[in-house]
Image (tube, rainbow, N blue to C red; front, side, top):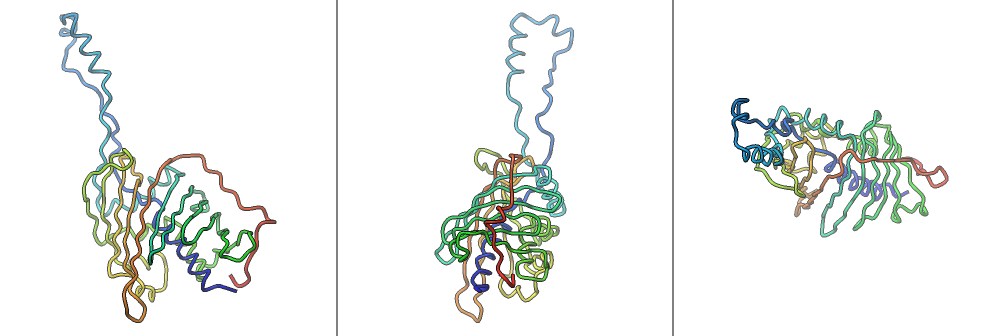
Length: 288
């Protein structure tokens, strides 16, 4: 049973997903403004023939797009969850690089009464397919040694390693760490794939992150003194891009490991169909 190796693989996959799932922020919901005219009724009656044409030309102009409003630290957590629940579904792509190896994961996700559900596949250092439904995670990869079958992992035990991964894939749990960030900074306004966004820099205390995730306090030794995430959010409170660089201290000294993760989000509200694999294509590993 290759639990340590498998655990590392699952941990990598969970990290990609947790960093990527829907950090969103609050913006104004004003939309386009009403077009006003300074002309009175009398003015309209006395206008020359050319004036109506000018007014018609003005009315055909496209209204200006709403600009994202700046968030405060108190706004961040509730705005994240409200925006993501309202969108319900989205597509994502994340790329992670560690120790010279790169992995790209693409997929779709949706919110349900049971929490976040998703299906994804990755290429690169650890090619795999993954389905998350309820309290079960299904993974398929040549490296798992399951003969091409899906490996089913029970996430219902909150105290197990895989139960922790289940928490990590739940954005509501993860975003709890964002409820009171150490620092929230508006870097500026930028376009992402043609969409106007606010670019934020979010600084977290690692202990706050571990508390929110209910991870062992000893894991703080594996994290940097501060966790910083860059997030781009549009005027509909939806995330469009994120980026994070972590320097993880080496156990017992030595050079730290640098991990970079960046991702994009799109197709909010798309139709998403996620089903568990056929029973005949699923296997379980004892002790997991």
